[in-house]
Length: 263
Ligand SMILES: [Zn+2]
Image (cartoon, rainbow, N blue to C red; front, top):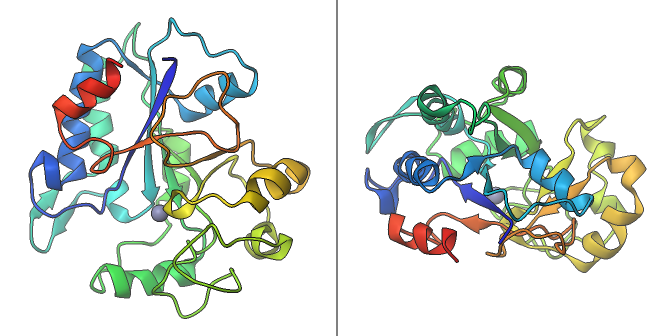
C-alpha cells in the first residue's frame, strides 16, 4: 500500500446512520483514520508524489474528496426529511480542532464541482426538489480558507436529467466523450483554475485517457484525473487513471473501511 483516496457524496442523506448518511460516515471515518495513524493529506500532494514517482510506502496518506459540489459540502442545512446536517466543511473543521498538530497538518479536502451554473440550476430542480442548494458563491471562500479545495468534475456531468449537455450524444454517461470539442471545457468555462479532474460517474474514455488529457496539457492545465476504481494509489498509477474508493459503494461500515485500511 502507499496512499488512499476516499470519496463521499454530501447529498447522500437517506437517514442519520452511517449506512445512509455520508456526513455520519465521514465524521466516524475521520476518527478511525486518526486512530490507525493515517494522515489526512491534500489530494494535490498525493497527485504530485504519483507524478514524480515519489510516494513513500512509509507514509500512511489518505485524501478526502467530495463529488458534485452541492451546498451540503459547505453549509449546515436543515434537510427536509432528516433534519439538521452538519456540512462536510464543519465536520472537517471539528476534526481539525482536535487533531491538527505535528502528525496531522491542517486539513485540506477536495470538492469536485460541476462548472455550469445553468446545469446546476436545472439539477436543483430535478435532483434536489427545487431547493436552491447548488450555487457556487462558496467556492472562492472555500479556496481562500483551504479546508476544501475546488476542483473539476466537468462542465455539466453529461447528466441524464439536463435538457442539453456539452457532450453531443448519449446523456447519462461519460465514457462517450470522444472529440476535442466535447473535452475542451476552457472554450466554455474560460480560463481554468483547476488542476485535477474527476470523471463523472467514474467513467473514463479512451479518448480522454490516451489523447486529450496527455496531449493537450498546455491548454487544459490539468495534471491528473481520478476514477472510482477501488484501488490503492501507487507509484505505478497512471496519472490520468488515479483510483479512489467510494463510500456506500466500496465500504458501507467502519469494519469495511478498517479492512481496506489494513490490506
Ligand atoms: Zn458526480
